[in-house]
Image (cartoon, rainbow, N blue to C red; front, side, top):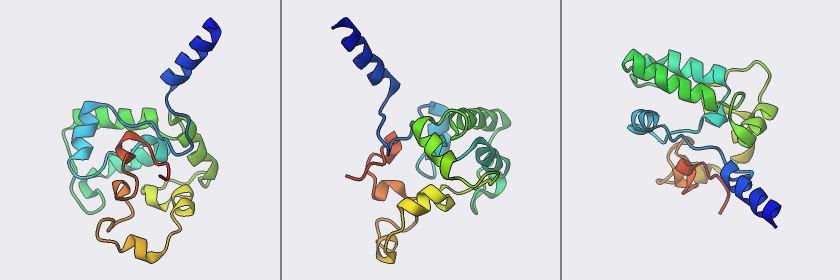
Amino acid sequence: MKKLVLALGLALLAGPARAGYAPPVTDPLTVKACGECHMVFQPAFLPARSWGGIMDTLADHFGDNATMAPDKAAHIRKVLMEGAADTGGGRMGAKVMRRLDPGSTPLRITQTAPFLRKHDLPASIWKRPDVVTRSNCPACHAAADKGDYEDH
């Protein structure tokens, strides 16, 4: 009985093992800085080289200037690198890496093979006023900020 309780406790500590789960960002500085403009995307959706590319181009961050103090940028880079698909992204990261073209450095989660495969949806979905853009995950996934992308 003790072994069963221990196994269940360890499973709970390990976090959800659902297919549509990505470890959420919990670092307060990263959540505040990135969350000012958009949902804080889970690092597990891109490899470290992609997050490095994104952090290297903050002056033109998808059309916006997202530059910040060097120490703040270094901290956020570290958080993203440690949770990236190829370094600490858990099951979701492994899934992303299996479907990613080797050596590719996607700078948009919405352009990766896993996203495109899962989101091959009618154009009418993307034109809904509550969706607007493919990067607006919470429009369809209410718990996206918590890393839950299960279809409900």
